[in-house]
Each structure stands twice: as structure tokens, then as C-alpha cells.
Length: 235
Image (cartoon, rainbow, N blue to C red; front, side, top):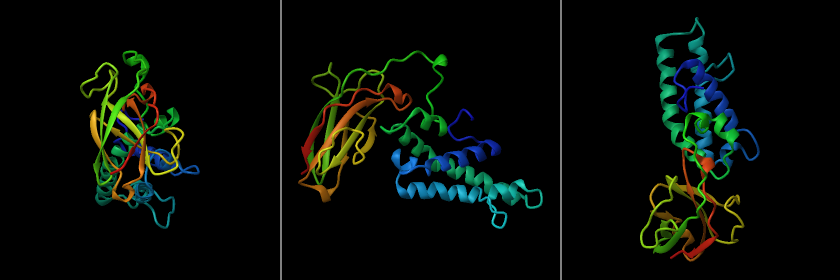
């Protein structure tokens, strides 16, 4: 694969879009759902592949038309270039989100071309060992303000060394989750130590259950341990 997440040459892009989309739609539940994509996002990703390649000679995709000397034109060239550009813009933030999923595996990272850099080319890093300490403040309307800190900072918000974000696993309503990887949990990453989770007005009065950990989006394997389960009543 190219050094970038999404290749920018026609043959490599062809392999990548087929491999990645087929991977995201495989499994039960499919890999895209497991890694946090919505049904709409998965459908949109599939639509890009259909525009690119169908495998049906009666209704070929843009890449098939462009690869056929009998149908290749300036117009087919413009079409494949546009699909490559639009797909890259669409999938790039989703790749970042999936790389931060609590369910992500090394195989996921390799297949989607978002594997960590070769360890032989980078300074050896150690996993984050300390736990996130955080306080919560209900703001009303289902919003909750979080302030996170390390165990060294008792009076100000901060982030642990080696972390570029805080990963939060949360859900509103009963039953209480057993672990951060429970299927009912939603996962989000926040780059600032003080942030707001918006659970929504429909769950006001219910409890918000939360786990949190220090996270490094470029090195998911270095994530710190999950905090104990915390809960706050949504105002």
C-alpha cells in the first residue's frame, strides 16, 4: 500500500477501495458496525465502490470503463479522478474514528492501511500505565461537562504523557454496562482535557454510565487502562 491511508494511483486505489469496502461489509455484525460506523456511512461507502466497479459488463463502473480501450475517454478519466478525491475526503475521518475504536484489532489496522508505523523506524514507546481521573458536571438538556487530569495534577485539567486524547465509552439508561467493550457502549475521542458529552434531551433524568482512558490515535496499542465505571444523573 501507499504510505498514505488511501492510495492515490489508479491501480493501488482500485485494490484499496475493493479490499476496504468488502472488509467493512463482511461479518455479522459487519466489521464497519463493529468499528463504530453507522449504517448510513457503510451504505455511502458501498455506493462509492459501486460507482467505481460493478463487475457487471452490462453496467460497468467508472474504473472498468476507463480501463477498457474501447470506452476510455477524457470523461472517464475525469470521473475516476473525482471518485478517488471524493472517496478519500469521505473515508479519511472514518478511518481515524475506527482506529480509535475499543474494538479495533491489528488486522483491522493492516487491512484498512492504518497500521501503526514500523516499530524499527520509530522511537520505542511504552504503553500508558496510568488511569484517567475525571469529574463530571451535568449542564442540563442531557449535556455533561467532563474535566480530566492525571494523578499528578490535583488542581487543573491535564493529559497523560504519551496521550493525545481521552477515549470515552458511555451509554445512557439501564442496565449498567459491565465493561467498556459492551455492545451498548458508544465510543468517542476528545482531544481536550475538558469537554462536553451531549447525550440528548430524550434521556434527561436517566443515568449516564462512563468509562474513560488515555488514548493515542497514532498508536492505539499504547492506550491506557480503562477507569472504573462512573455514573452521573442527566439533568
